Image (cartoon, rainbow, N blue to C red; front, side, top):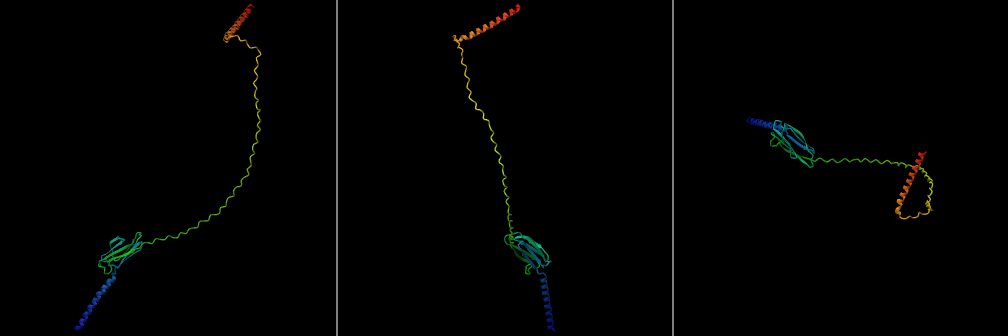
Length: 221
């Protein structure tokens, strides 16, 4: 009987231990703490699922050394997309998570993880289709106008100009030769004036005498 009691006690202890282990296993599977960070050339995505909402949970995200989220609290899950600026070299995104349900990170709930951000490929230019240039339409040369016949204007006949008679040289008329004898030279040329005056006086005196004689004859009759 003593042995049977001892075996029964051992069975109960083993059952209790199995119950505790099963409970711990169930608890661990209920809070799997699955963190995830992925990156493309233009976006960084953070996913945190199956965390204990009753625990103290925080998340921090850094992109190329710049903090975009710092110790932000969350519940049983967290999801967010972060845009990435254009870059010419690969960059690094970092995720840091802390949960009081797994402070040492043995269950994978606390820790840090990284993802590489690649460079976006440069789009190759699409081949441009060169449209064929239209062939020039043949141009028909306009016929050159035929020159109209020009009627030559008759040249004016030279007008007859009556020739003017050439004037004959005039012959100077001969001076009449003096047939009367030349007056005799009376002497000095200086006495010609007084003589002419005396002659004029004689004429006047003669005229006066003639006038007086006629008046006297008139009174007599």
